[in-house]
Structures are given as C-alpha cells and as structure tokens.
Length: 311
Length: 255
Image (cartoon, rainbow over all chains, first blue to last red; front, side, top):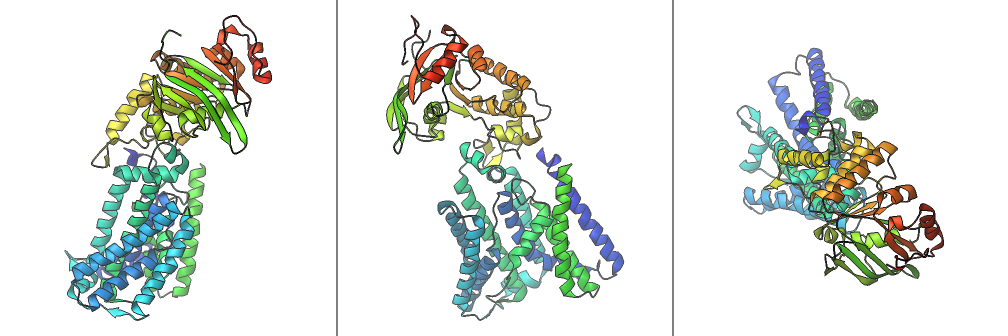
C-alpha cells in the first residue's frame, strides 16, 4: 500500500515532534497533563482542526481557501437567526451546513468557470460571507441557549468532550475520501499536475467544485461546534482563523505546491499549535510571545521539510 | 500495404489560424502494424495534422475515417473513444503519483467510488510485463524514475485501453541512447500487436531505420508518401528542406 511508502514519513516526523512537545510541556508544568487541561486543549483545537481537514484537501489539490473563517461566521449566523425564530435546532443545523456548502460551491464555480485563481476567488468570498453575516445580524450577536447546542458545546460522552468526536469523525471521513476514493486520487493528480490530469480525462473542474464544497461544508460544521461552545453566534466570530487552519496544514508537512501530504498530519499540526498556545498560557508567558513563536514554528517546519526533501 | 482498409485516413485536411494557412489539402493514411514517420520542418504542418487527429485541434476542412468510418474528433476524449492515443514529447505523467496511479489516471478501477488499488497494481504489473518493462517497485513515485522508465509507463498507459492508433510525438527526444533504444524496442512490440504507429521525429537516422513508410510535409502540403526504403537518407533530407519530391517510378507524390 502507498501508506507504507513516502506518505508515512511526514506523519512519523510530525507525530514525533508533537509527542516531544507534549513531554517537554508536561515536565515544565504539572498542570499540562491533567484531565482538565486536556479537555480544555481538545476544545481549543477542535475548530481549527475541522477547518484544517478541509484546508488540507484544498492545498493538496494545489489551491487555497481563505474564506473558511467568514463561511464559518455566515453559517453560524444562519443557525443563530433560525434559532431566534424558534426553528428546530436540527433543521437550523442543516440550514447552516447547507449555507457553508453553498458558499463553497460558489468558490468552486468562480474558480473553474471564471478561471480566477483560488487565492483571489476565496479572498472575495472572505469579504462577501463576512459582510452577509453582518448584514443578516445588523452586527449583533444572537444567543443560542437551546439544549442541542449547549450539549455540543459542553457535554461529554464516554468522558470525552463532544467537539472531539466531531474532529475524529471529520478526519476519519476526510482521510478515507482522500486516500481511498477516486475523488481523492483526482485531488492528488490535480495537485500534482493539473494539465496532465486534464489531458488524461479527469473532470478537473467538477472535482475542484467538490473540493471547495467540502471545505465550505467543514467550515459550517466548525460553525456548529463554535455555536455550541459560545452559546451565541457573533458575526465577527473566527476572524483570521483561516490563517491558523492554513498554518496547521503547513506545520503538518503538507506541501504548499500541492500533490503531496496526508490529511492526518493537519490534525497534528493543529495540535502542535494548540499545545504551544496552551503550554505558554500555563507557564504564564504573555500571549504576545505566542504569536511570535507560532510564526517561527511555521517557518522552521517548512524549512526542515525542504532540507529533508533535498536529500 | 496488405490490409485494404487503413486504420486512419485523413482526407483533404485544411487548417487556418486566422490568416495563417497551416495545412492545405493534407492527406494521411495509417495501416495496422506499421510505423509511419511524419516528417517536415518546424512549421511544415506536421504537428498541426497530428493534433487534429489527437483531438487537440479541429480541422477547418476535411474528413477523417477510422477503420473506414467517418468520425468527428473534437477533443482528446473523442480521439480516445476511437482508440487513438498520443504520447507527448514532454512526459505527460503526474510525478507525484506511482506507476499504477498514472496508468489508470482518469479511468481508475473502483467499486462505489472506492479505489481498487490492488486490482490496479496487479493489472499494471501485467501491463508492464507484457511490454517487457522492468520497474523495481510500483509503489515509487514516477518522479523518481529514469526518463526511459517514465516513457515506458506512458507507453504502457497509452496502449492499455484497446488502442489501435498510437501517435508518438518525438518520444525519444528527451531520452538518452539506451533509453531511446528501449522505447523503439517497445514500439516494435506494439507493431506486432497490430497497432498502427505514427512516429514524429527530427532524427533522420532514427526515422530511416525505424519507420516502414514516411510522409513528408512542406508548407502545409504533402510532398511525398512512400515506403521509407525507396529513398536514401540524403534524398529524404533534401525533400524535407526543398519540398520538391525526388522522382521515383513507384512512388506517387501527394499521397
């Protein structure tokens, strides 16, 4: 199987880094490895991790999706607005997921039909979705105090917080899609050489639309978790989170050029970022330094990756 | 030629790009199990003619017959339906994928959308060994293979799906001596299987030794179409340059 070949190495590497980091942090602070902190950590990581799964697929296909934070906000606002008018939470959730998927479809449509680079198309969507979220709410935050969302945000199942299950299922499904289906194979082919993929009869445009729909859907799924955690849907939520998701994918060792990498490393990339933030918080180091450190980690991760591949 | 029905007949093909006349009333015939060399200067029209057959361009005028039936080729997928495959000079593979993935690119074997990786690997192993291609491991990315091995993967992909007509556009241009030899040995193997091969090359020596017939184009028109060995290498070169057919009793100018 391919998993045994070139693709497993980045996973081994990044896993090693994550474990090392966890060991160091647990030596530095007795609070790090407590159940309470781990619960906290998994909640912190869940939103970025879900977005990173979609972002990984987009980046492997050679694209980028800058609009996930805004799509998240728009989907959350749709859910919040429907809850305000007493729509059943289940249907509100479906509407939220549909909103995100539709926004992703528009991204894909614009990229393929308009022949517009993903960076620009999704930059446009970043503004459009965020703006729509503000238009719908007139800038106010809806409260969402229904049991369904409070359960998602705060409850545990078998001792583990609910958002963690969202993350696990997301990565399981996306991994299977990417590594075991025809769709996934096409994602790698398009990321590897789009011209060749087209020449060999891969429906490149159709698959690209699907890729951005998947990313939009996952942004909406993250919105469901976010709504649960905040018990509210502020239209300004998750601003700049797309950069964290991209950083998680890059730290995870997915090549920015496309065609290479596995989805699971994005989860570990997100974990590493969350651990750094969480660890520095516990150690009482200023959050200003955290940003500096994460910036360094992104650059070092890619630098190390380059050194490895040059050999 | 022994077989009365050609695999491909291109008749009265003209093509103009705006004001530029690339082809004027060009002809081409290809029979099963032969290698037809298509020769000409850059700009003589040979790549336009071939692109029309491969579906990368459409003719302004003219008709194409495949095995006696008139066909309309508007894109590469149409060409593929008629068993026409093309191997390009620059290697058309995804470097980040392994040989089986490249072999089945765009036509993956699957069940309910799930890849049948083992089946594809087994088929790829068979396909490669049928052409006597040896590749150490099918799991490695084609990027890390030699140019010859990659061209071999391209060829086995091109002939894997019921191919009758194979267009090879300077298939050895990017390869070394040994590897070119390997590609030519492969081509002989395909010939034996009854595949008709259109061989485009600038290497006169290669064309002279390797093709059964040649057709020479000059200024978008046919100069001559004849068995290769009716001419000397020098005569072929002079016809490519001048566009004036060398008189021979048996060969008819203009195809």
